[in-house]
Image (tube, rainbow, N blue to C red; front, side, top):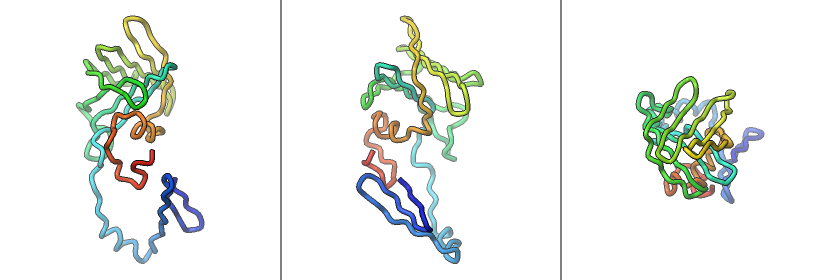
Length: 166
């Protein structure tokens, strides 16, 4: 958790607290000149996250461009399905992403996502046996779940003081 009050700041993660200090305006230019700006650490970016009422998660990610945003052109989508901590990658046969929404097609089934608002969507898992309504989670709001609990990126470090804490 980042807390800034009265010109002082601190970052707390688990039991660890790191004090932050404001850089005085006179030092700001010199500090920025010495700063090392790195390319995005993560090569993948979340696109879709949903769960059914039995606890099965459906997660889609794609390649990240050099600017940190989702790659354009051939984004290399991946679909993962399973229980928390045990998601398994499903080989995608096709991925359709357009103004109507997202459709990810695998031999196990199809994940259909239709936007319903700015940060909301309706998600459904479709199989020959029928359709299953899913609960949508906006990926940008669920980093701890995606990077920590689902297991898709197990063992990969975020490079933050909170590594290993969630």
